[in-house]
Length: 115
Image 1: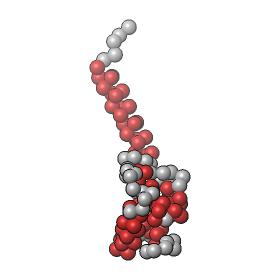
Image 2: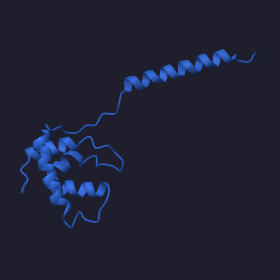
Image 3: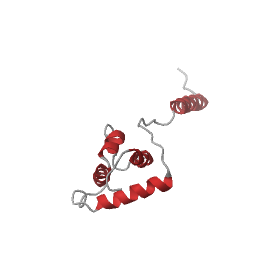
Image 4: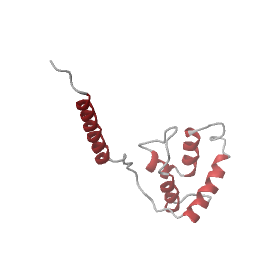
C-alpha cells in the first residue's frame, strides 16, 4: 500500500482549518440575553457612584471581596435591578460585566430611596 504523500496531508489540514474557520464565523460570539436599559452616562454614573459609596460602607458588604462584594453592593443599591439583570446568571469571577451599564440605567427607572 502506498504511503500518503506530504502534500495530501497539507491539503487535508488546510481543508479542516477552512471548515473550522467557517463554523466559527457563522456561530459568532456568544449572545448574552438580559434586559437592556437606556444608560445616560452623566446622570446614571452619578447616581450609581453615590449609591455604591453608601453601600460600600455598610457592615454587610465590608470584609467581602471580589464578585461577592460586587453582588453585595449591587443588591444593596437595588435588589430589583440586581435580580432582573443578574438573578438568573450571576456574575462570575473574571467575567467582563457587560450588564453594568444596564444596571445603571435600571437605577434611573426604579425608585431607589436615598439617591
